[in-house]
Image 1 (cartoon, rainbow, N blue to C red):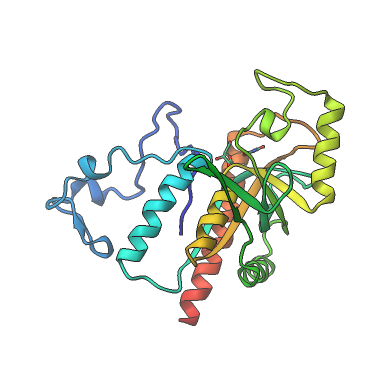
Image 2: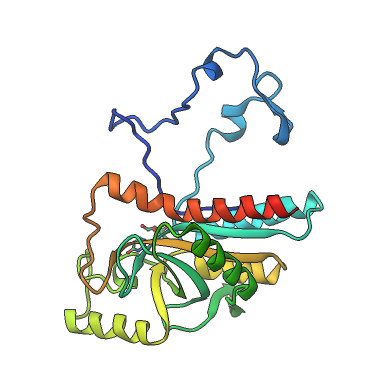
Length: 258
Ligand code: R2B
Ligand code: URA
């Protein structure tokens, strides 16, 4: 299970404190904490040195770097039958904010199911199709859960949050509001229901490496209504938990079947 790109703020009462808060007073009092499944212990491993600088950023380069190393890790560990799901946030098109989109396929900003990378100075184009059976399994889970709106649709992946997603509120804007609406409506007409910044390389790399992959993102706003994300922190936090709740339900169901 991998997630990259999105920032989750869990700041409790202190809005400036971005450190992780464990809801368990016992941990701080333990002389040693053995993370059995990771084969790591706080006495035998220097966690801050090993993991202190771990940060996943946003967008295609960040998730691509993470995936290269994650996929190699799974390969070296001789894992098989891997299912990997990207969860995160997105801007919706024509959906009520808070809706969750299970991606049918990831498409580029020209609505093509492709991810293009320049390799050794040449264009390499990889397919971004996602596993349809996994889409259906997740959709069934969403019906069983029945907690929030869930749709299946295409997901547009862009290299930028502002101009790249047709926003009018970036530092640069080279088009009119009418152009923006025409673009988003054209996207909607091709089946695109949300826009984010990682799905295409995620789909392309997982597909090329034979991993069963899915993308499940919540929409934070309806881009047909505006560009700014204005919902309260509480509302956004609850929205961000929705893909986790759906995928958590899916994982639990898989474990019960195993
Ligand atoms: C969704 O949200 C982030 C941009 O705000 C980006 O990581 C993405 O894909
Ligand atoms: N993430 C995006 O990439 N776009 C949005 O509009 C919201 C979240």
